[in-house]
Image: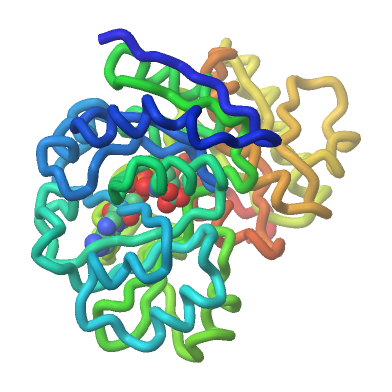
Length: 353
Ligand code: TXA
Ligand code: MG
C-alpha cells in the first residue's frame, strides 16, 4: 500500500485539508496524526475491522487495548457507563489535554478496540490537528502510539514514516509533538482512582482534583518484579527499547560522571560502540566523549520531549552500550524515569550504595 504524507500548517488549520483523511477513517482505513503527547495511529474506534488493522500495522498483541480519542467532553457518555463524578471533575480540569481515563464501557465499543476488556480508555486531546481530524471525520478515533510495537513512541512524522510507511493509508505531518511522552492514564472503573501510566499530569495534579489517587505499583517500580503485574496491559511489555543496552547511573552529580566515564572507557576497550546520554547542565563533566544531550534539568519538559528522539538517534548511530544519567528529582521524573527504566530493562547502578 502507498502511504500518503500530508503536511498541515499549524498557523493555518483549515477543515478542507482534513477531508481526505476523514474519508479514509470513515471507510475503515488508517491515518497517523500528531497529538500533544506522541503521534497516534488512528482508525474508527467503533469499527472492529479498523481496530484489527491497527494491531496488524503495529505488530501489536491484540490483548493490548487502544485509547479512544474524542472531540467533546460529553462524548465520554456515548462510550462509557456508570461514569463517576471524579471523571467529570478530572475532565473539567485536564481536558483537552494529555490525560486518558478508563471507564466501564458501553456495548457500542467493540471488544476488538478494548482488547477484550469491559472498560474503555478515552482521551480528549488538546492538539488542534488531532481535534480537527476527530471533528471533521465524525468518528471516535482509536489510536495507539504510531510506532511499531517495541520501538520508541514517535514524536515526529519522520518516526512514523520509518515504522509504518507502506502499512497505513495516510500520515499527517504536524511537526514535533510538544510533550513527547504518552498521556497519563487514570483508571476510574474500580473502587478508587488508580494511575496506570505516569505522564505530564502528575500524581500530585490528580490528587489535587480527586483527593485520593494512587499509582499502580508496577509503574513506579525500580526493578522488574514478576509478582507485580501492571494493570494497563500495554505497560507490561518491554517497551521503548532501543537496540543498544542502556545502563542508568544514579547518585551525586560528580560520582555519576566518574562512573559513566569509567564504564565508557571499559566499553570502548572491549571494542563496543559506546554513548552517554546526559543533561545539558552536566555536559562539562564528561570531557571529550560521545555525548547525547537530552535536555535541561532546569526545564524538564525538554528532557521529556527529547527522550524518544534520542533513543531513536542512538539506534541510527549504532550505539551498543549506552550509559545514561538518571533524571530523578524533577517534576516530570516519574513519567521520564518510568520510560527510561523500561528502555534500560531496569539495568541501574547506584554509585552511593
Ligand atoms: O498519549 C497517548 O496516550 C497516545 C496518543 C496517541 O494519544 N496514545 C498511546 O496509546 O500512548 P498506546 O496504545 O500506545 O498506549 C495505551 C495504553 C496501553 O498501555 C494500554 O494497555 C492502556 O493504555 N489501556 C488502554 N485501554 C485500557 C483499558 N481499558 N484498561 C487498562 N489499560 C488500558
Ligand atoms: Mg504505545
